[in-house]
Image (cartoon, rainbow, N blue to C red; front, side, top):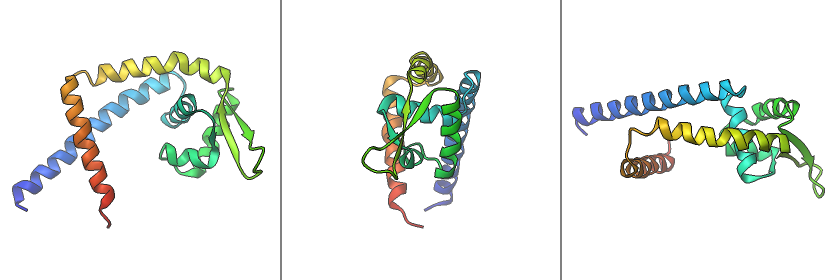
Length: 148
């Protein structure tokens, strides 16, 4: 590997990081305008699209430490957006389930979020988006295979 290849790798890392930061800053601002933080939105979005989920598995599905999930679930439950449901067959399992109020909120918010993301990424053509998806997927999968 040459010095030029290493410089190119560093440049790619910086460009990816800056693009991710720019997208996250704008989407986080959108969530704040709707009285949510990114984690609260991620939990609501998971329940909205996938239905009832065991509390123990939510952290893995949205890439969050399990200790933080209880706090987020508590906040969303206080707002009436979700409820806890005990598993009838296993007392150790508790589910989080979106309420009608939470669904109504997401019925309004999620299409706005989708449109917002579409506008944010509109600098790329559909073909460029496909290329970016495939390249980033390839990168992510290759990193998973590395062990440090």
